[in-house]
Image (cartoon, rainbow, N blue to C red; front, side, top):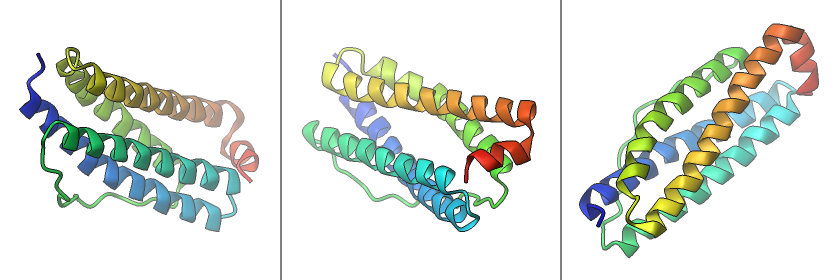
Length: 152
């Protein structure tokens, strides 16, 4: 059986970290919209809402496991006006997050409910990572201005 204490700690870490990411994506959404990049703004607004859904699932699971949910302090995160710098930063966050998340998914392999939640979240983060990689490749191939025109 999975170590419930470690699972609860992992779920809490997701709640804390993902809260920060969701807020960051909501902020970036507004910045990109203000710059006229409505498609990019919409993408990150949707992403923030999706992340809040995973936060809710993790909170519910902590409570199901008898844990105590905390509203922990979150470290300051950067905000970017340069789209390329933002995508590079967000891609790195995804890569680091996936490496850490993989350990928590493995820990939950005998707790099928938690495993399913974490597996779904992992797959979503992996998709986000691939999207970031693809966008940077597109920027390289077609040029930043052409890419930005697609985001209007």
